[in-house]
Image 1 (cartoon, rainbow, N blue to C red):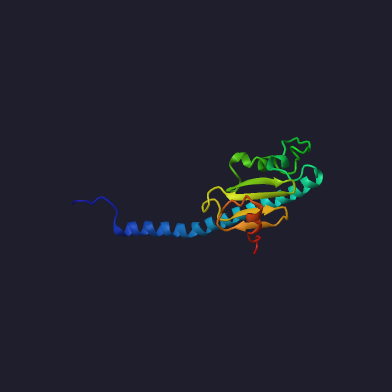
Image 2: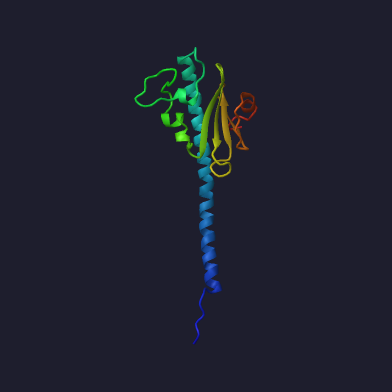
Length: 162
């Protein structure tokens, strides 16, 4: 009796059905992960806003500070160059690798103006929305995931939650 090698149609259909069931379970979890990354990015911008307010209050002659100026290596002695207001890993943008799929930066425009940004490392993969904030302390989102490094561009976006 000759024996055929290979899989039967029923066996292949069962494998495809199992793969589809696993995908149906995994895809909603992946979508929740993106929402979590976006919430973490918005939270980091709130942290940066709070640090900027503290920095300008402590060093009014300097004005607002950059990420490097807000951070400081532990043990930290507060100075205008490293105010020890945020964790050093955030101050260095986590070694240039970002955090939770986002890169963070602060551009000081003038002594009284800054733009803090959080942009997805890969739009659509590590995050969908980008976030920004200016000296008014309102976190705004850009659904296109673009970098809004100017005060006018950030100020024109809708506030987070709207």
